[in-house]
Length: 328
Image (tube, rainbow, N blue to C red):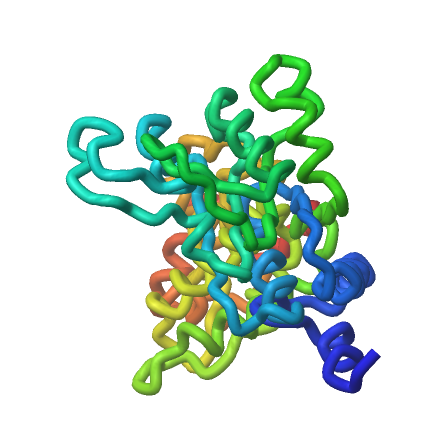
């Protein structure tokens, strides 16, 4: 293994960030499969970074200078996806006024990433299977076949066993794509990576003229205690939210999105609806917990004056002797 590869396995590769044991295994698998040209199936919940894995496989492969073409199979309408993938000739259907090269051909000898491949219509799955088996592409309305040179990487957040049992995904296509399978862990299973990821996103979003220069230990603790149903994408959005709202030298707990402060069950459940006074009361208790019971510091975290917090403590029946709540 080269020095670069050894370094990247330790520190992360491409846009992937994390040093946990589970991510180390992902990095090692990427390095093993990258030099090959066979298909790879990347499984994982939404927001875990399936496209980043596909891009890393491409970047560490011998055809890294060739195009990387992502295709969101769930975003294209069933009437357009066949033309997008395979292309068409003039007159193939109403509105086809000129020839169009499909994405499978545009990738050349590069990589096509079929994101959410399980969303592809079953009838088109048959055509994709045929193309993979014969390594040929036939545009819509044409009898001429062209070689398929691109490497195929597919990703999905669905349970493919269940999809095949329902008849929504072809079993023969599954076996064609599943030469090598990479299963990405959800963020809740690698919480040790959360501080590193949070700092990574903070450095990306911080503004030169922004107030925040770091993340407080209390905020990091709150991030690490959340279960992240939206995975890394949700964490990224949360840090962007906090950077936008932060007014002090560090991101504080009160700068984080409301889903991290109150109203979630920590298991990806629905946000509970509470009254505004209850929201305020919980926010004060959270601030007191983060401040270790120091009411002046809690007031600073909340962005209110010390007189105001003492008045609120009395209003909500939070006694002067109230100790910070123990973590659940």
